[in-house]
Image (cartoon, rainbow over all chains, first blue to last red; front, side, top):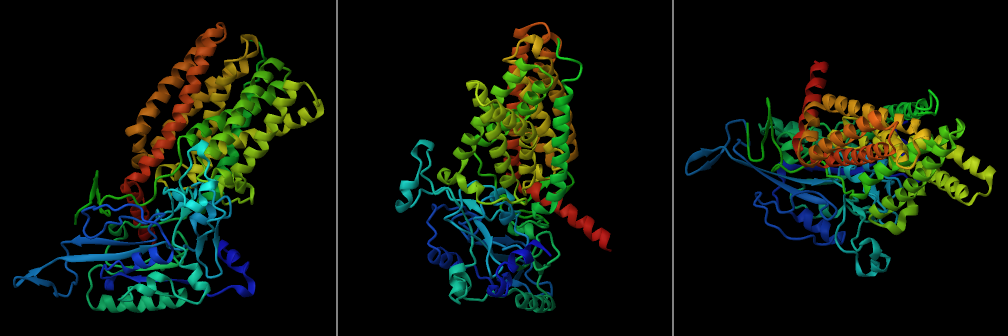
Length: 300
Length: 308
């Protein structure tokens, strides 16, 4: 039985079908309603305003204070390969503007969850991965563990009601815990869809049972391919990939790295059994090596 | 096909999202490389101490015990200080998770640090001999994992230069620990009792230099961060310090207490620089998306080739 099945089984009859997102980037219009709805519902603090000059994107990346991020990519590429191109002044204009709303992938084999030493990160009854903010002690191990760079430590000052817990001697007045998308765990518990999916005006973000979303995505890919869209592919729908499939997967129009996504993500824990064996042998060797320095007597 | 944000490397062009990183840089502060160093000293000192006790070299046993106890006392302070929520440090012991080297390591540190400190305090007070013996035995056995698990800790991440070195890092950290523990005991041990500490310092440095070379060679393109920026500077500094220190110990360390102490200090400083080099390499590796993208694309190509 896989780790995922083990985790899910702990819920027994309270276990729910696995929920997730299918983000279809072909219909994303870059309105950022998902970013705003997420910030509002989850009370995520503002973390600075900066004009990046990177198309319409001033959020730049997912992090502790951005749980949805809309990427904008301007390309000199035709949107479709069937001869249909945009026109400018009567001339064909081979230009396309890709938009993609990125989010935590809620991996089947979640690196952050495996790495977390406190148990703050856990698998919910919906199969999603959530941080318990009252447990996390800010060790930060999940941050470099995530193959997608999703989870991050919040560096903003602590909330006023939280301030007495600050340790002035250690200079800790920042929040110091890690944060990421919860797939709106609170809304799911109440039978609602996540805020971003609710707010999305084009159904680019689709919420539902993962099995059903995968079927829907296959059909959508067929349609998009037959319509001649350039570079269409599913990303993260395969349960046999390096993280066991994403709980939130995508229909993209170019290579994943163009959107800032890893082309072949692998959960670090996949290598851990071998790494522990290596460590055990290296540990024994260190022991024997130091012990061997006592051979040959203790005189000069 | 190139567009804004494309990155060129010899023989390959990749695209990226405005050159932004894919994996996040670690959020760890300077406490962590210092802890890798003190944890290594503490772990390897436990073995030096135990062996010295068993072979009847009580003078070296005493030095190693106190060196280890100081390093053991510093280690949790460094770790707790690095936490985003230091007041929640006890949450580290809420559970034991074999999937998390951070969890396993916390328990190792509790057992090893607790045993070494107990033994040192009882030695200092000269009381409860049987309890002290038990603490010494526990420290003897739990020391080596304390010296090596930190290698597994950083190898079990998505940072390319750490994760791709998963076969080497525990060895490198073990060798570095042996070198620094030997070097630290050299500072406080008279010549006639210091032979094992000298050998540990010199052999540890030789092994560490060889392993570092092998690791960089195996990492290839991903390992180039060890030649660049801060990782490169700390790496070069480490090589000069450890090689000079070990040479001094090997050449004059048997005759001159001053030479042994100076050599030991150089090796100690060099091993600290090594931990900093490895630490900084992780940040540099995360910062540039080409280190994440190119090996993964290569892997996909290989997979596809094997499939068809």
